[in-house]
Amino acid sequence: MSLSIYDTASRKVQPVKITDGKVTMYCCGPTVYRDAHVGNLRTFLLADLVRRALEMHGTQVELIQNITDVGHMSEDIDSQDKMLEQAKAEKTDPFAIARKYEAGFHNDLSRLKIKPADAYPRASESIALMQVMIAQLIETGFAYIGEDNSVYFDAQSFPSYGAISGNRLDALKPGHRYDYTEDGAKRFHADWALWKNAGMRSEMIWDSPWGPGFPGWHIECSAMSLHFLKGHINLHVGGIDLRFPHHENERAQSNAITGNESVDLWLHGEHLLFEGRKMSKSAGNVVLLQEIIDRGFDPLAVRLCFLENRYRSQMDLTWAAIEAADATIKRWRKKIAGWGLSRISTDSEFLTIIDNDLDTPKAIQYLRAIEKDETLPDRASRFLFADQFLGLDLNRVEEVKAINPEQIQLLEQRMQARIEKRWSDSDSLRIKLEESGLEIKDTNTGQQWSWR
Image (tube, rainbow, N blue to C red; front, side, top):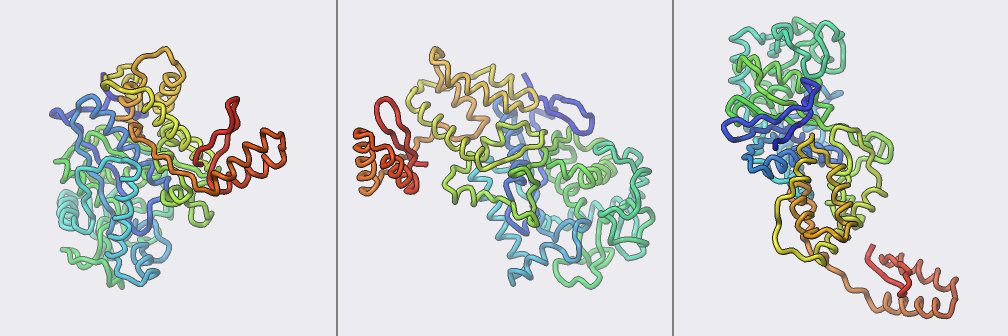
């Protein structure tokens, strides 16, 4: 058995290649000028699921995830670098901003049970790596110094440009949003900056052989992935929004250095909607993991919501779905504790499901069927084996918070009202109990309560 994943470049499901007994992975990390929202976190979960699936087969994985703390994407700003803009808004140093939101990023990963990468190299600490690569690209004719003293990659020097996204150079029109800053400075409109001349900028700049400046966005991932993974990446992960131009440009840079395909397989996760709309600051619907926790939900409810959708399908997350997932996790933990466990054994049927392009919706359906089938032995074993991949912390014992004296009194009053068939009073008391945080269910044996 082996894991197969959809490769964006070949448009096919391909087996993940193993080199010298190990899979090398690179995942594009966050730009740390703000908190990561749940849409960002879906991409980082994708890398975690691939890693867990491989490790369940006993495969060693080396995962590198960069931290972009050198400005922001130079081709994706309107007037000012987003790192500097946020530093100005918070009246502090831009690197203090970076460290603050980097710490928040790691905290969110921990709360979602996303395993740490083997290294998180920072762009600010990898400037020398980028400058060495840029110098090599100039020397080999893949890059040049423009009229504005910035260094550009010569897109026309790389014939297979467009293999990932399908965007061919002859079809790219001048003036698209990634080129607004360099009109007239470069030889061809689709060329992109490797090193930006500082100009009037006075913060977050470095000396270089081409004068003071700062790196372009794309060069950092090429430099760090090739350096930390020793020149070859088996699996490169990112959100679908990075397919073009970021990964297309990264592929060109990396392959120009190595002389061959530097990445075996390109894996992309699809967009996340929230309540039917794309998450954006302007729409006012950006949802952070902390907000979900503040509403009383287990953060792993979000993880389960993601698992119930295929990673390469656009997903619409809702508060109702999060609430339902939260209830499911709590129910599973309670049942697993009740079923009892002697040992965890391998479930080959579950492995077959996830090996097929991470079919997580089918994996969840499989567990739901096991939950309902009371004739099956070792149900706890099957769930906990699956949880090595799912990461839902299903062996956690749920703590039941005690109810207070006022809630006890309301429950007793409601029970009496139902005995006396005072239904209006019973309904009023239910409302009060629900407002206090309890969920009430009426059964044949009487009323039952649980924390919402």
